Length: 137
Image 1: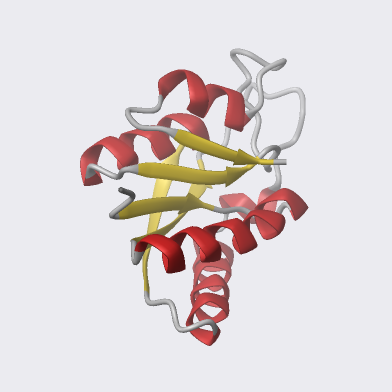
Image 2 (image 1 turned 120 degrees about the horizontal axis):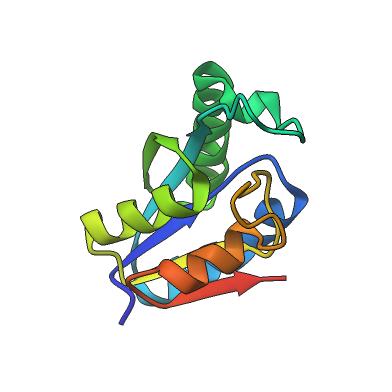
């Protein structure tokens, strides 16, 4: 059913809480798991400072490898991807590009859509995703 699962992650508590759900799904369906983290493009006109760590490719690389190690401890092999852009749009573009069957993500993450400040990244992903999205509260 879910052959390929995309798990976008950042440094948020909600992303960490979604790990258990991703593990359960991957084990139940014997899915391929793809970890994605987005290096946020800085917005020079932003009134609110975005998480500077999420703008550092080196920090994102460490985050992804740490997550990969965590899944490996549970016997789950993962592919890791680092992309640059606005998180919600990039997540959906990768899901479409890789033809994933499901996106699993936390309900709130780091990142702010300055064009729609009232919408979370998760809400935007739900609106734009080319596949089902499982939001873990």
